Image (cartoon, rainbow, N blue to C red; front, side, top):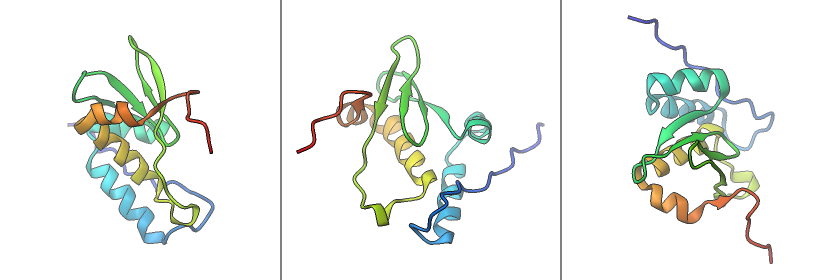
Length: 122
């Protein structure tokens, strides 16, 4: 039986947008929802791959983007509306994207923007 993958420290933001304990809760909740392969990839790259529930497409999730892997490659940006002083921990963003793609891929594809195709600001 392989050794368990050690849980990494929460992402270091260099800012105090939220309390210290929120970072650890977010990290623990993400860790509980990753399989061993995703955990290993997260330790190495701070990103991981999930499978969409509708199309079966594979997506690599990181903090700033979601990349649909070949054969239908595309890069998406999912903008979640938060005030700067109310930004959730990094790991919460990752878990939100994971749940959305694994449980409601069609909704993700409707609300995410293809990289470089953002709506105009008014």
